[in-house]
Image (cartoon, rainbow, N blue to C red; front, side, top):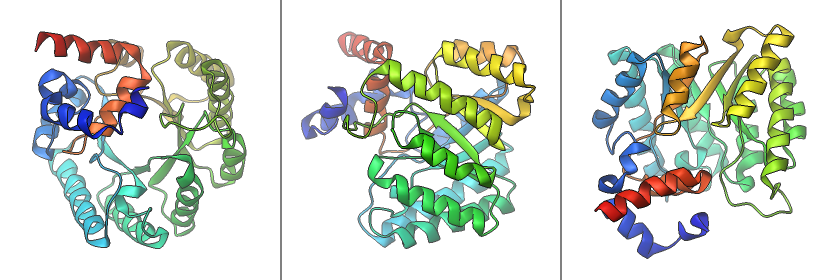
Length: 299
């Protein structure tokens, strides 16, 4: 229901106007890079690694994509200048994928090369199911071009993902596994949580065994403990996997895992186009929606 409501222009106007005052700042590091940098530093100082994303997805023309590329180049340079333990995650639709796959490839290849020069890493996020094939094609092209500082994401709720993983494993890929946060039909995605969880566990263990590096992105403690136990049982070194969570979600758990000696990264986005990101966060976890509604009642 929340994901469907995200398309309401009236709700978008209201949340965009009042959202930061009502609690959106819990999940978004700010509307500008200058606002985000102190948040990234604070998380680093607490022992957490971070990534950051300029929020936004659709663009209307090539000129807009070039502005996004310029912003990401500035982000990479600022990370280096500030000495932050932060990498970059981005969406290919923000770089023009919905307009032209070749345009998106040129843009992301430029950013991956710029990141390599600065000793940094780019994670290509996965989006709606209609973009999966193109995203994986672009990831393969980047790897074939010799770029090792790039990874992508697989979504456990899609039926196709086990086959996608099998096809990627020969690359020794750097992958992140997520449950999936887009509204997809039952014909292509598991509609029941228990089935998504079971698929996530299978994929996670296959990735731990076959990927060069795996980012385990979940706030589900059962799945986290399963990953930790599997890695220990199979002798998988801790530097081959990382636990990833979202800014503002389960912060005490993040710090507890760091205290246990695990590598934890907090995804910490920023930008003026934060509305859809916030709506997905509210849809994923009822506690997030309750937090937002409590602030709404308080005014």
